[in-house]
Length: 124
Image 1 (cartoon, rainbow, N blue to C red):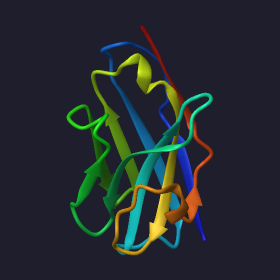
Image 2 (cartoon, rainbow, N blue to C red):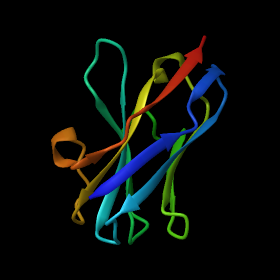
Image 3 (tube, helix red, strand yellow):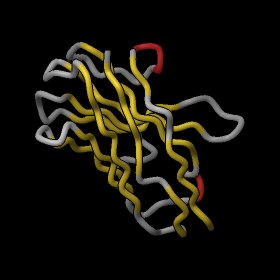
């Protein structure tokens, strides 16, 4: 079993920055993929970024490419999402997710474990 706890959300003005953290515990390993998703009111949950624990492979949604950076700290068992130049449309609840296996997927169905989410609100 894997437990995920997100933190770092909040209210920020457009153009500002936030860093989200996802603390993991349980049976994660280098064979896991960690992802960030977000869900805005009235919309489906969508893929934001993903990273493999055991490698430096990363993948981003086009809407955040160049502004967001996903990283991980193996010693702290924590995955981060650095969000710069935030826009109003980035407002959403952000979720951390994990899946076992080497492949990075964008579909929520491919992820086995989820955190409770953290709210990010960008004021225009």
